[in-house]
Image (cartoon, rainbow, N blue to C red; front, side, top):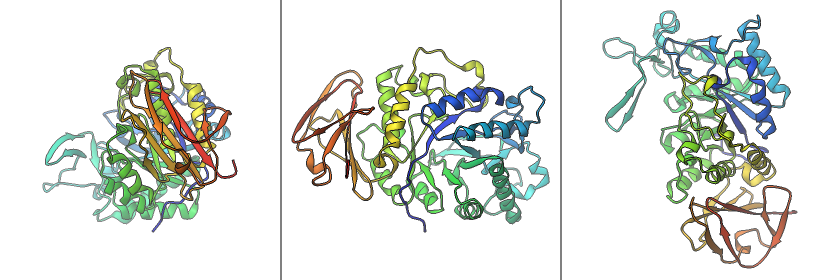
Length: 434
């Protein structure tokens, strides 16, 4: 059973949401901007032909490109995809494809070609995926048909179909796969699929999308062989214990991905009513909290309109007057340069005498590098705190530094009082042989 091992460099993922990017021939500026900000992976939501609803996640044909992304340049659609993937890889970027295997569109040809691949109710009708809150069904997706990955009488051919799908897109240039609704797919299938692909292409990464599932499900997926799971730190209030408890439980098995917003959530700028300092703080926290970070297109400009899997279009691009690209570039470079921010190493809460300030000490697994993050939870007022004796927080005999998002550091010693502006932050770190 795989245990979590540190990686040299965590994934810094830019989510290029294709409906706002438009046809493939318009993607290059977005790729260049992502590369310039220091992202090393590009995650692309489904670009396949959708069913009647038009939802990106209602895939009708996995081997046909969504017409919305086909440029009018005379090239076959799949060749257009290959070329933009090659452009991204030429910039040093790695590509992640959204792998949706829990369901297909209700009008997918697969229903007629392979009827045994689908779940049916006691009356023999196709089962639609649904969402439940306790005993109450709160949503049913009528445009989707649920795949029976666990009990299909033809599941060996079904498994081979998924393997061939991943191998096909790996050949095109996708080195990572974000597995949608991963917890709704049997562990045995994931273990088999991941094992098969890694046996051929060992460097392939699999990311388990875990929105809405329990920590037990997250750990279960990590044990099934996923390289990354997504954590829930986006929803943390910097106070309740659940986030760090979940982090510690999952950290034994797999590194995790943080995000300040995603295509499944409201825009952070909308939630924070355009408070730029608070937006900056939240991105900093998401980038430094865990091994990997993901950021959707438009976050860097404070977009406030939520991404929609059916109706979003390039015309939804916003002119906000906000530009966080420089700050995000600094944070990503700072993350890349410190091992402690490329591991899901131990995190503990430190008392600084002010409950409006979240103080977190994070260490590498081998304890050779540590960091202290101070975050002012108050978006309106300056807050002050005091750390009683810094040295016990860091390795004995090793100097520690106040780190700015830039090249300057200064050695600190003894006691320290500090103050933080509204939604402000400070970072201290210590590393052997600094």
